[in-house]
Length: 110
Length: 235
Image 1 (spheres, each protein chain N blue to C red):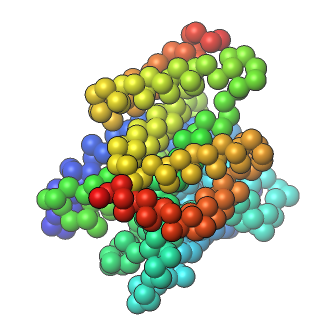
Image 2: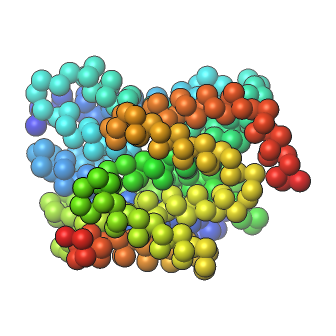
């Protein structure tokens, strides 16, 4: 633990740095400046790509080459996909998938 | 304040999956920060002014003598650099809004960004108020989770192992919702494949920045084909 002043300075540093990464693009293209077509194109095409990446990001710690060989993740992901294709209800898919995964890692693949 | 009540009411259902996730991963941060010797006021302060999942987890390791501010800034930059690209994709949309857009920009976490990009704004609410509502609700869940974890010192009484899968499931569902629109499919696959390749090459701790760069490179190089593909798919 640091002293109070150092702690506050540290929090400020982390807060400002985090905000800077989020604000950088908006500072580069302020309101009164025309957004170049390339950036507009990126705005359309990037979000679906980022969500593809975030799925992998969430699963990055999966143990593929040792027990349980990614089975809990595989089963739970398939359940989410199946449920969502069937009912297309976000809360149901996320809720049931999460409960299933918790049961799998806590009781089945221990 | 006209319209905010309606906007909050409309936004709430979309944020429930994030609530499930944030209460618990926020609590995990509260526990970690308590372990470093910081009480609930400090933990809540962090979640109010920083508001970043993996960024705050990482930050709990900064609060020991011997870590310089410069190191902390560098490590935070590395873990959050993907947000530069998120911002790039929202410049056009947010520049139409007033000063309050800076709160949207401040609150641009992975989950909030994805939710905002995949949700069609209902017809009967103002877009800016709706997006502000989503962002505010998400941050409230995060702050409440932080406080609970910090006070309880352990992630709630029951065994919450695996609860983090709520975030995975949420991103899978968002992925599918985008998939239903054909024109999104090539970009989704580019993101997925780029991430798998970079994960295999760079490992779990270092693959996000290479993935973002690879994605941007591919979508810029393949612009002609991708734009034509989108036009054909939507036709």
